[in-house]
Length: 470
Image (cartoon, rainbow, N blue to C red; front, side):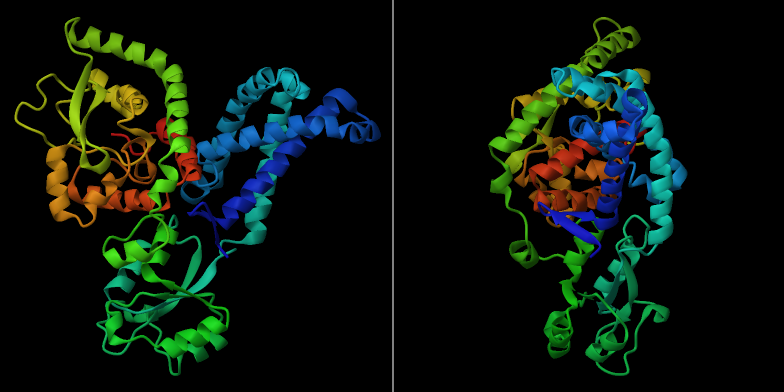
């Protein structure tokens, strides 16, 4: 099994295992640092370990949380081991003051966290031990560890989309594709080298060639499926999964071209009422209040910078009409990053190297400070902290006519940050917006407080490493 599902969100099993290994290593590193600083005698240390354990666990959990927020584990895919360890250094540096702050809040209960030199030593031990353990993990597990062998039933348009869209390392990390089995009478859109021409039945093939999962990606099921064959395979313990569900699980987005209204109705998820109440609102208020306090100095500096560049009388904020929950319009607030008459000829898409952007505006857009006034939209309830980005009414009207299911993104409150912002760059055209909608629908379908927390934590990585900013 290459994925586990927590509160409807798919998490890759190797990441879970690697996270647990990291936690154990961090707890051990802290214990090692305490041993050398306070004990030095093994029997005395072991007798006293229960008093040390809470501090060691908190140190491990704090650093693990920071590593998750900086995308340490995912960076292994794009940046390799060197990039992963570089982010680990950054996380451990942040972990020293963060652990000390937890000590202050604990009122001396976590006594061992009160020594800065101890925290520093534990971080140094942690860095080297994490490097060794990770190297051993990847060496022993291998690049294909935990991957399922998958066979796709179908070779038409849906099968081709699975083949084309799930070929990047980021997506195809949970499975090994055995091949595509074309059905009689179905147009074939898959290259011959990827096709499996079965001499016998599907059941006989999987008996001789171990397969853990069969993905049904047939364009027209009305022409018939080999149901007896599929039933025999299922009785052998092979998982049978719909193509759209498989695509969603592996890519963490919804395939617009594969789904129908029937799939939306009968598939798991879209239980919006369970996450629209007190818990989510409490998280919105807490997260926005923390961000307001942390971002206040930057907001004041932004006000001063705009005044210096454009004059004392120049407006600092600007507002726009946006479409929110259930299609209702509201005003969203931002720091002004463009010249004052930027839209005198009407609304247009923002673009890269936009000539209307001021010098201060270019900077605050890069570090996303221009979005901070939307904290007040979250506090007054017109926005949530996590959700799809709100779009302008004129663009919503255009996009709703061209993109299927676009209006479904208005089933939840728009957000200051969201799943699409984490997974995809800035959208400045219709095709980019279509791609972001795939991620927005995944969020709406699988929305939970856990997913909201995960998005908030990983937004730190977006801000620090400028993913998706323009």
